[in-house]
Length: 114
Ligand code: HEC
Image 1 (cartoon, rainbow, N blue to C red):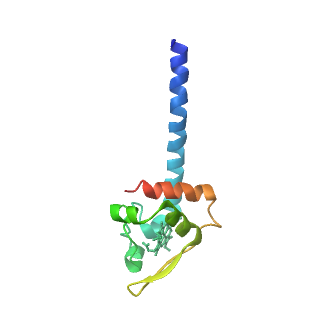
Image 2 (image 1 turned 135 degrees about the vertical axis):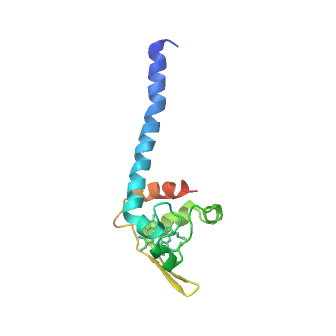
Image 3 (image 1 turned 60 degrees about the vertical axis):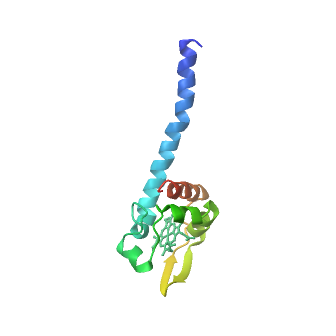
């Protein structure tokens, strides 16, 4: 390959990387704005809200293993309303305030917490 081809190949390899980093930044911003108040910026569920509602630590390998992408997506889209050990666990549905794409990005973001 000549020099020009090398540069073209390198650029082609880097563009998706840069695009990915953009997506990660965006989902991180969405997480901080809409989710971190309950789940914590780090996703560990150590906020006051989280303690009150017994929110799980999503960086935990066992939690990651027990939840499929579909479970996570459904929870974000449709919200959560259940009781655990006598504690009400409630989370709003986000399907009206986030696009399907944003929700998919949040699933990937939660996966990156482990
Ligand atoms: C009002 C507080 C609150 C906010 C804000 C909130 N959640 Fe939750 N979320 C909860 C509670 C409570 C649970 C249930 C306890 C648990 O599973 O840890 C939960 C559960 C979840 C689950 C696990 C569902 C399951 O099947 O176990 C995921 C994934 C999740 N939230 C993602 C998000 C994302 C992404 C956002 C932001 C778009 C968000 N949450 C915003 C309170 C909240």
